[in-house]
Image 1 (cartoon, rainbow, N blue to C red):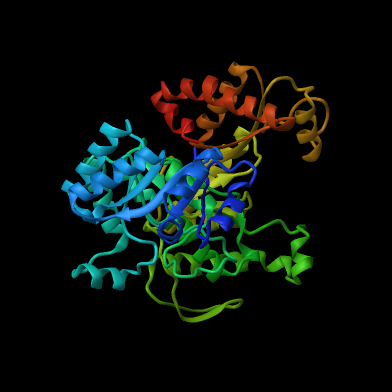
Image 2 (cartoon, one colour):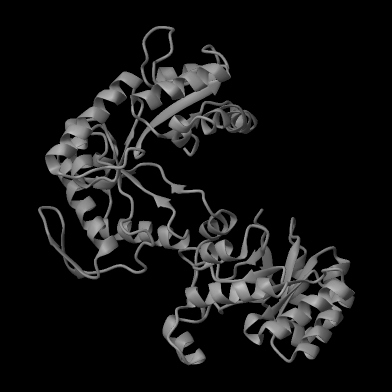
Length: 455
């Protein structure tokens, strides 16, 4: 679970202790400036107030000196401290051994990899060889973990790769957290808190997203957003795009012609696809004109997946022309089968192919009764007739939910966006937990259906 460490980057103990009283605060970082001025007394005061202290002095010295510093930190009650991995294996092993023998693993030692202030050219100049910060962070992460450290410090841009190198149990401390509107100061490699936490906490989970209405977007901005998320997550973004519904209020709000949404989407998807893979892009279209534009960073995945949503003949043609996958909305199994067949026929005409397991569907579900309020609300919102549930809902016991999934798999779906129909947060968690515990395991034991379990 990700936790927040408050950096007490203030010059005096008086200011630091004001922040230390924030409600819910558990961790506080004391860095070089504050420790040099206030010394061990501040650490003792923070401990007395019930806070866990992260002493960030980035020790980098001969092994005996660093081991002695670790011992002193243990006596102060420091919970976590930094050593610099560039100190080398002998220094790191000595530090880890000191923490184990004196403090029983406290302080937990985390190894600094590459400072967030380093750009690629500057770092290469500092170490005297051509290397990228991300590559170096992974190399130093492996060095630190092999020496017995508890974890690592890395920028949010490398957190996914460092997590993969360090393993699921390593502690990762991620500085350089900045929201979009924040000043960067001297931080060169930054990210938002949400993206950093998700990338560091998971290694296999894809970063899905609600279908983006492509025709309402600026293609350059949207391409940059998607590429950055893919880069931060280590190549795990799964984007989906739709042209939008002609009755959506956004058309009037933005002064755009809804009748042009298909042509807008086509131009935007082409521009984004090229920006994700080409160094420099020029485009001359009916709605957009660009000359010599590029984005950085580009996606890790090449090509970046491009899933298309929609049921119209135009959506089928668009999927066959540029898509790497297709996501259906609320359709019954028979309609899904018809649409998958239409995409296959269009693909044959274009000479392209889409992986067989890249066809998905959106399926609202509920373990419960057709009379449950969330089911009735969903059916009413979609103008379903009569008391019987629409055939794009999965409602009932575990067997009923499994049967619905199997019907969609037989119709050609292998990826599922499952929407729990719930009343409140507690019910939402219950519905999700039952799906995970009672439904997905059954699919994992059936090779033909295994793809559905990964939805």
